[in-house]
Image (cartoon, rainbow, N blue to C red; front, side):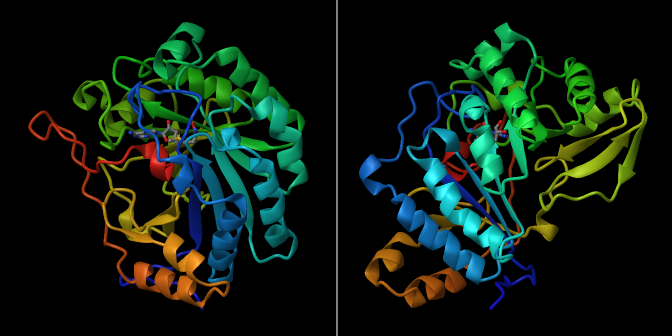
Length: 331
Ligand code: SAM
């Protein structure tokens, strides 16, 4: 039953964007006046559950809910509670989510009760004014409350920071000390050319090879084989006793070990974050009550998974590599 793509990669990780809407407008992610997917096209929570369940039956072991902001989807906890049955049965090894943290203080305990053990919280700066500037609409204090609540509920947190030139490059050491000091790993991410934004990505793009070289002036970084099922490559940080991950889609693509596909809230399956090709799963989902059509459509889509992405950020290529924003597929 396992899903194996044409390059022999086993697909065991599904990311689901449960909504493309968000209560932040991070400048590198979205334009301020974003056009969102029409609400009428959205899959219901029951449909999302059915789709995820078919993927679990087809060998998915790790399920990550993302967005947009997953915790702003109405009644999302109902979906998470439903999905937790696959954790209880042992079919699913991990149910997790990526969040901006704004709603975590409300939901942390319930997430822990549903068998969620680890979450990723996106946070690009510890300065309240810079935080408000980069997110346009967010408040750092609220996110900090959410992180406190999540840790109090026993959730393990990984902090994700997009490395942005002249914004947080000099602050990464402080973020690293803060995160590791609170028992959280930190992952830094290269900005990817996805969707039109109001800024020029060339001005924001910071190759992580440069960042790493700068960090090595202050920290002793040792490569380690640690993996969480995602694309980050980790180092141990001697001075903090914690871990730092690098996600480098631009300077070192990690497609050879890709085990993921991405589902949108309207039932479109993207086989690669950096390519336009997609498969519609909503029609086969709605065409019959049984799952055979859906299962066949998934197999057909996995059979088209491309070898990799080809993101480019430079002044000559002044266009996004893919037209959709990260909020559609959730990163
Ligand atoms: N709202 C949730 C959050 O903030 O984590 C989940 C969705 S958000 C799109 C997922 C991650 O993608 C965040 O860490 C965000 O910083 C990152 N992201 C958004 N646009 C990006 C881009 N163009 N390049 C790299 N990372 C990006």
